[in-house]
Length: 340
Image (cartoon, rainbow, N blue to C red; front, top):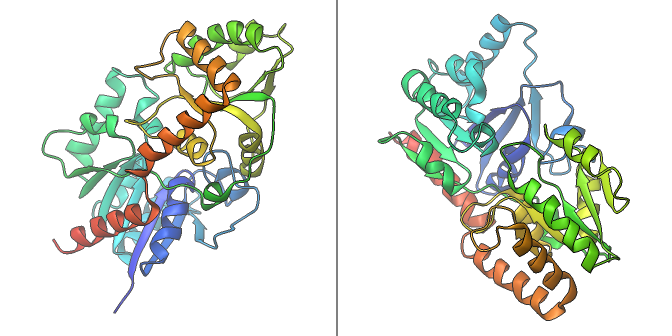
């Protein structure tokens, strides 16, 4: 039987890297074509970069077209050599249009920030999906978080597919740190980061031994860093390699994420699987700065409450997140398209 051949195309390796690993067990031959920079997977794989090269030995390539015409020709060639073209972030204008007229089945896969970065009610994200509906017409639309399914046009062949985790996370060993880890973007659309910095004023008074580690990541960083420059317990760090990120995660006592339970992202999943308590900045239960400060104090000062929260989160996540289940789901999507 001829193996199913899938080409993943996107700016970064990201989600495609770990899905390629999972699907290899099902006999799928995957190749990742990175479009943004030359092969620099030390800084591109997953959220923050994987500085150990290509640990899972996935087939990685770079689209080398030096101009638009060459890029289009490369993409058309790929479309004739693979059964499925899996376009992450929709593949952008060039990727999505160049592969439209090839025999391969085409999936437009949106991972959240591809759309959510423009704000919750922005016309830009609505136009973007309208554009893909009217002009590109993918064979299948995938979104990585349940909240985005409502942004897909009525009648589209659309489905939610959660992002896979780095296998390292499932076996992470904890170390004892003295800090809260805030690894989310500081962008104006993530209103929760401002609420957390207001909550931090209370947390630092109640817990004088606790520090805050956060990443210079997002358009609001200069403002926030300037506003907190006199606080010697806030540690601003530059964007991390994957190994550095894992180390900070291992040592954190609490992770501050954006979403939880009904909206999954990698930061939240990784924290939960690492046994680290988590506060979501967009939770319906913990929302105001006072509520955030109170819950952080309980999690950092009450071991029984901390363990209960971690175990409850794990049980909730495990109802939905299972690597084998996700790989079978994606494999079934590919086969469904090819049988049409």
